[in-house]
Image 1 (cartoon, rainbow, N blue to C red):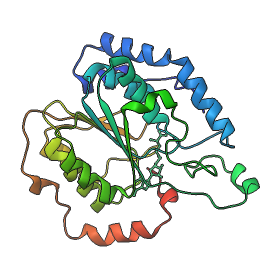
Image 2: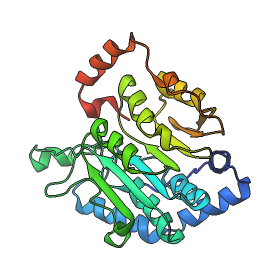
Image 3: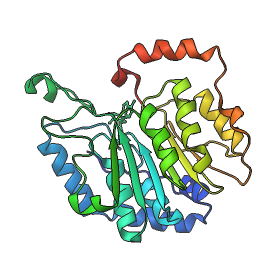
Image 4: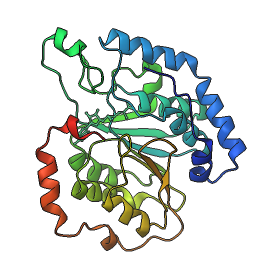
Length: 265
Ligand SMILES: C[S@@+](CC[C@H](N)C(=O)[O-])C[C@H]1O[C@@H](n2cnc3c(N)ncnc32)[C@H](O)[C@@H]1O
């Protein structure tokens, strides 16, 4: 695990709607969470590999929680739990909010010697489940739901009264991405923020671009990463804008057949 060296305070400032100095201060506080970083690093080492796939901007997630003070955060894609841990640590400092995380755990059944040779993966070490590296004291604010996002997100959309921050760090076909965002869209009030990872150098996919238009939330790219943020404006356009065009469906099915890990988030 590597420390994040180049956090983007302008990005956080634009998403949270606060002056950049406040965003910078929140990010500095996040980089000062050295006990959390060292814990995650140690857990990764004990997990048998030096690297588990994780979000590239954990400090910005922490800062967003500090600045937005969300009551409900939804996160899709947990892996060992780096993003979850930073979100939860910020909630712990705030003494406020619940993190609802969704993950479909992936078990690596290959012999240990072959597993160790891989540089990055989110497959679980033997005997662990999603979020295995998250410190236990932080878990009291954590509602971790294991299962396919296609099934769990609609349930969360029904259960939660509101969602102020949505972190989407998971591989996605275009059709499913539209459905995933549609599941939470009615719960996202003006001022709610969504973050979507499209992997290194990834461009924003068409359904999320359409969702952004429907919420008057221009995509804001995090410098240097395929990570986009959206701050929902006051207007909420009709849900029809979220529906993917019919022709997309075949493309999505083709993608779904590829191994999940090869597609990247
Ligand atoms: C990029 S990793 C998440 C990294 C994590 N946010 C972090 O910072 O450590 C993507 C995660 O998505 C999960 N995943 C893949 N397909 C999924 C699905 N259909 N539903 C829910 N989770 C899924 C994988 O198991 C993996 O843990």
